[in-house]
Length: 388
Ligand code: KIV
Ligand code: ZN
Image (tube, rainbow, N blue to C red; front, side, top):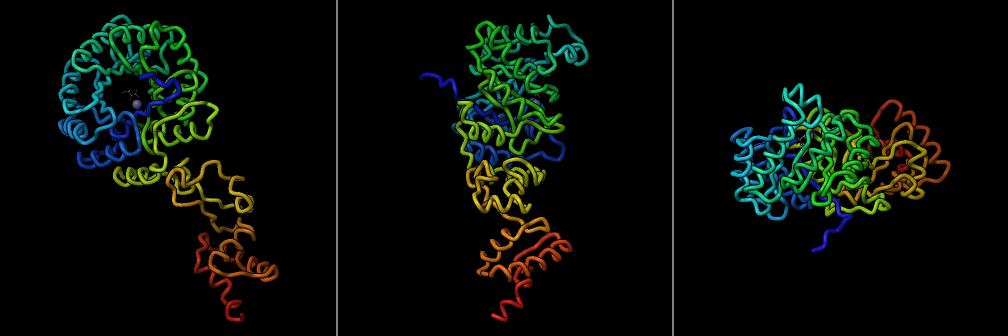
């Protein structure tokens, strides 16, 4: 089968990088439930866990491998035999197993985490890939802290692990350090300078410490990466990982990029809420795509424009991501147009003068009471209803 050069593979790490968040731990049955939903969402790869880390995590990888059919199931390891053996064992029921192994690539990590040298680290990286490859065909290698790594050394490492059998090379911005053009340039450099780079897929794995995870992931894709790693709701270590829903909707919205995924975006909202509940991690109201305010229009200027033509203030249709509907929120910043819209929704039609009078009373109420609901509206017009 010919490989589609514009297809972006989606690698979900909600159950691994996402689950590392304190307080977000899940039981195996909860993880299975989420994995099945991720399968329905259409993700290509589910990173099911870090098997050597605990018997519970090992068991989750085993059970998820049994529970899903379509996605590749991936297990994380460090670059050592014990981790890799555990991962191989945990993946024995997976229809499409992948091992995700790797080691630090920045001088910071090489010196201050591994107390090692570039040469030694390179050897360990290659050994790990070769060791994993004996048992599993699909090997993803991560060059941890690649965002801060020397690009020439990174290129050497990537070339060596591809020669050793890596099928995917993950270039993580582990600390969310890079600017989008720096990260994009790094991917471009690898694409242009690594021998046999086309034998592997370049993957982007960005963290959100500076709020740039999504922008960096897109920069990576624009420069030749074809796998994006992230989580639902952007949960993950510290400030989180790239939000899958954001990247997918950016690619859909900006078709000029020419890139596409296999994701059923209509499933986003429900899955976002399910993960938020199970992981006890609320979604911030202004979170792009899935926040409760993502499709709520509250100022008079926006409401008026939206009611004239929703596309004035809506670049994504809420229904396209499974969001119940757009909303016009009534506040003291709302205009007459929004008030009229809500009254008509309740079956109340007022003439211009009546509306002006009710609007003045509405503003007084809205200044005093932040949340105006249907009962408030009915009280505001009650005397008119009685008269009519
Ligand atoms: O952020 C990171 O570098 C990681 C690796 C383990 C892929 O999560
Ligand atoms: Zn990570």
